[in-house]
Image (cartoon, rainbow over all chains, first blue to last red; front, side, top):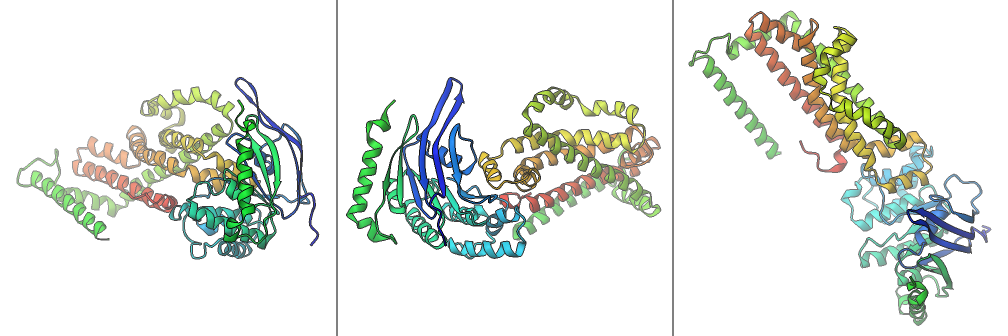
Length: 257
Length: 255
């Protein structure tokens, strides 16, 4: 399988909002090229434009300038998106929710069911196919949301603080499962998070962003060996990286204004 | 299960007490029939018109008007609410006229409806429609406006067509609020149906009442009143069943 070197090509993308008191810069020009199959974490404080960047890549919002190119050869839905909240349809069962993107793009019911069941199994929700979202815990709902985002097999998965609403133990589990899913599907993943530990643990590269105005401060390559697991968290290199990320976020640039 | 059973016992008991009081007032207390007919006379009046087939004609007419008015009122209420939430500019234009229409007492407009739409079925359905429309409309507006913006993001990400978005996301999400309006509308629909038949026409439960009272057939009048009560109950039960089916996902719909 030939891998695209420029799966996501972002050049000088910026975003300004028109507010009551003039324009507000949400994101200063950002440029980065992301390879197919790469796992990128984006860390930064609130208001650094990390969610904005994700929304621009997904096409939910339009950039004020610059260009975003996705090497996805004209797919109707190139990205899967996982929000901070699960955003499941509360009147549909888990399997119906996971199958929803397929149902709405004309995939046959039988084919959709097969795909949805496989995904539900992959995210560890086997046995809960017929449950309604309200009957599941927050972590389980977020698993379902991940399965839904993957259901029509988008090459790119964008995740906007997907695990911020679940408890720490669940979060650790979900992180490991996300790595497993990433390794088995080969998706290109961009994950926005507040947590420098999560960012370092998961990613190939970490983008550090600072706030007011939101901008990309630096990018770290994460050289930690794969597959990652409990031993990664004991690795001095991991701790050094986490400390470095903390310093990056704490420098005056991040607190200016 | 036992809760439901004891509730049934309670209802039956209450009904029995009511029936006994009724019988007592007409029997041992000796109230005259023209004031209060006995349960037996009322029953006989009911059976008589049931056997001649007249009952079904009147009941069917009223029921048909209510159902038609409810369906049309719901469709229009939901459609206009949806258009207004989708096109806020239109809402600015429509808000004024709608508030005036909404606050106008529809019952007072009933004679006007007869002038405009005649003595037949049309004026009756228009009256019922006007009574159903507003509560459903208000509920639907609240429902559509309360839609989680994340749901909009989801439909945009999935590239849903307008129809898909409405059918799959917006309508089901607004359904709880629509139902609040529909339940109010259903009660109003029954009132409107009977009232419209009082004022004009030769058929329907409302007409049966005016006919019975004009000819001093108090047992028949009583039978007609009881029929409207039963009709109201049936309407309530039908809506509750529908609500349980459509809103079971809320997990709290217990009538």
